[in-house]
Length: 135
Image (tube, rainbow, N blue to C red; front, side):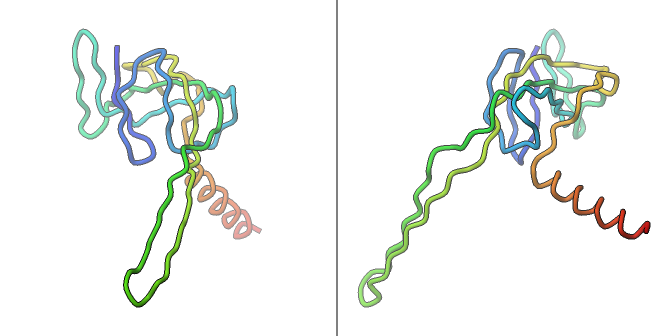
C-alpha cells in the first residue's frame, strides 16, 4: 500500500519502510509523528482525495534532525562595478522512516500530528498572546 502525502510545500509518494528527508519538523529523534494531509492512497484500489483523503494518515518515526548539502549562491557584477558576493545555505531537514500507511482510522491512532517548526513557533506565539489576554 502506498500514499501521497504533502508536507513542507512538497509531495512525497511513500510506503511502509521508506526513508524520507522532509523540511524540519518540531520533533525529536525517536518520536512518532503522523501526517494527516494525504492526497492519495493506493494499493488494491486507489482513493484520490478532493483535496485530501478523509481519515487517511501516514505514520513515521523520526530518525534524526539533519542539515542538507551546502548550496552556494555566487553573484558577480561585471564590467565597471567589480563587486561579487558569495552566500552559503544549508537547509534544516528531518530524516524519517515511514512505519505505517493508514487508509482509515487516523483520528483514533493517538499519534501526534507532524508539525513544521514555523507552525510550532506560530502556535507558541499565539498561545502566549492568548494567555496574556486571559489575565
